[in-house]
Image (tube, rainbow over the protein chains, first blue to last red):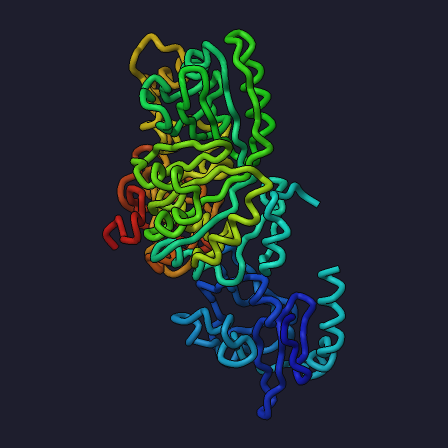
Length: 131
Length: 363
């Protein structure tokens, strides 16, 4: 079973988003996603300053098996990409909701965050996917 | 639901992630693919390869039949149990399949063909069997387990019948030995020492469990792919198929040109391709920039032309991305790979990348 923290929001495409105290939003991929991908070997996170739209493919995670796009849950400006993933992509496998975060975004429209799936809705989407 | 091997329930119970592989429901990993890969390079691992098809070919003229059907020459096989790797070709030189054939006795050869090509292989084998009065018998009653790694033979030997174990431990590379319905061969698809073991399907679940108890790591098709690619071995359907010849697939060494009067199927086409110059070749790649090679990525060889990656992955042993690519024959030691709209640098190398746990190329 995969871990779905109650305090996060999600996309059906398995990204998570967390609203930080400073108003930025941290984004990563869910525990379910890292399990499905397997051992991660390469991550391309976006650079600070890049403007992204909600739903835009703006990072790539590659496992031994395959490459997958990571979609931004919200529109806005990237304020940081996780540089540690360059040398340690396995941080996503080890700690998908912590050290394995991928990017931080300053949202242009806070309402987009509120409209994301909550943990319960994401768990329901996972259940629907696997049955 | 796809086809299942006799070990399917064992894989599910062990927590394997199951994927479709050429119509078969197969374990891709049991947790970490990279750990499974390292287990084979450093100690021992086992693979369920029961989806591959064992075919027994029997008849007084079976040798002549195989000398006609295979690009490599079974006349090289003079000792019982000796194995040969070969391509089976269409008349135009395209590869129907790559396979291993064992010489059992003068009227019996045993072939192991790929799972995804099984039906067309059997059809081709049968189509040509009539003229030679050869019987083509697929052995669906057999399962097959590969145990691979520096300690694999030692760990598995204790689980075999003692007489078979003693003979199996004496086997040279590319030899096999039989006992009743069991057959043990010193072959593999990982670049490590080890055995491929054929055994009755109804005995395989217990044997698998005993191997696990003996400390052999269960490995899925994911690790099998990274291991074979590090070992520089082709995968049928990715690195070659019916649209290319062995000469364009890094498999020229498997064509037996001598004796010159042996008229194997595809010979004329290969000879004419060779005479007019083979336009493409299969090479190894090591990605210099950061990223991961994947099949179908475009290869750009400045001032020469273009090619395509046929297999690509991250090499757990080298911690680099490696691959195989079909490129223009004039390609030298550098090329560029188009990945997500950017051109990344790659070095052209001669496989294997890894043999017996060690890097086989300069990095």
